[in-house]
Image (cartoon, rainbow, N blue to C red):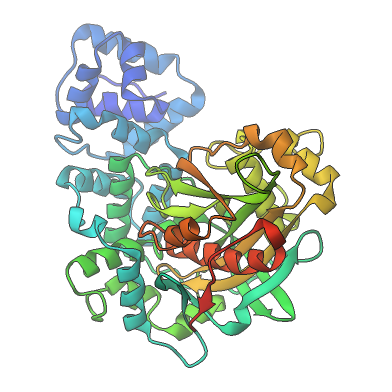
Length: 515
C-alpha cells in the first residue's frame, strides 16, 4: 500500500479523485470545511495540519483495494494540479470532472486520440473554464434559424437534386437547413413491426476520426459552465439508406455519443459565432466545417463519415367535442430545456430524440422503437427508459407488465393509433440524419382516459398544446423564430400529412413545398 510520509494539498486532492468524492463529501469524511479542501486545489504545496494528516492516513487505510490502487497510480503519474485550479464558487463543476461518467469518458477519449497522458485533457478543460467563455455571447444567441439556414445554403449551394427544405404558408416562406429531395418527402410510410426497414449491420466500414482538441476542450468547459447533461450513450450511425416512394430502407451500426459531441456537433456553435461576425459563408472562417463537412458529397456519403441522427414526430391526439369546440386533434409542441446539449431553448415537436438502442441493438434499430421509447419517456413519465438518467437494467423494458397505462392501452388497441414517416433529410448544421414522423391517436377515448397523464420530462422547459382546427394560430406557430430546423421540418411535413388524414377534425395551414 502507498504510504504518504507528509501529506500536501496535491496528495489530498489526489486522494479525493481516487475515491471519486465530491469536495463536500471529502470534507465531511475528513471532518473539515469545504473551503479547506478548495484551498488544497488552489495551493497544492500547502501542508495540512497534523490533525488533518492523521485523518487523511485513516481515510486512505480504510479505502478499498481498488481505491488504493487508483491512488497509487495517480501519485505515480505525478499529475500536477494547476494553481488556482477552479474558483471556489465553481467547485461543483470541478466535482463533475471527477464523478460524472460522461465527462470522464469524454476526457479519456480526447487523451486517447491525441496520444497524451491520462489527465491531460482534464487540465486543459480546467484551464478553459478559468479563461471564461470564448463564444461571442449575446450576439451568437441572437442568431436566428433563418440566418443559419441562409448561411448554410450559401456555403453548400445545391447539386441539382438535393436542396435545403423550403416551404410556404399564407404568411410567407419558411426556410430550414434540412437537405432533402422530392423523393424523400411526403413518404406516408407506416412505422411499426417489420415495416420501417432500418437494420443493424455491426460490421460497418470504419470512418476516419479527426479531432480538433482545442474545440473539444472548449465544448467540455461550456458543458461544465452551463450545467448541461453529457451522457456517452450508444447511438445508431447511419451507414446506408434509400428513401423514395417505394419506402424507407437503410442500415445502421452502433457508435457512441461522445465522438459526435466533440466533433461534428461543434460546427453548430462555430457557425453561429461566424454569423454573428458576418463570416458565415466564407471558407477559412469555418475550420471545423471545412474539415468535417466541406461539401454536399461528404454530407451524402454516410459510409465515409460519422452520421448520427434522430427521430422526431408531430403528435396529434383525437379529442372529443365539447360545448366550446367541435372534435379535433391536440397537437403537442415543446420548448427545449437549456440543459439539453442539442436545440436547447428551441421549439420542437415531441417526441424528439437521437436514434439509438436501449437494450436490444438489433430490434431497436427500427424507427418505431425509438418513437415508442420516447413517448414513454417524454410524454408518459417513465424515467427507467431515459438513458440519460441511468443505464437500463430490465431485460424487456417494454414488456406489457412494465408499460405505462397510456401506452398499454395503445398496444391493446392497435387500430386506435398509428405512426408514419413523413420525410427524411440531413441537417446541414451538424450532418445528422433526420426522420420526420407523425404519431396520430385516432380514438378520442384515449384523450378522455389519459390526457391527465401527459407530462413533459426534464428535456422540456414547457409543453404547449394547439387545436388542429385553429388554422391562423398554427400558421403563426410555424413562423415563430424559436423553431429548431429539424423541429420545423417535422411540423410542416406533419401538417401536410395530417391534412390528408384528419377529415373534419382539422383545419390546418396550407403548406406548399418550394424545392
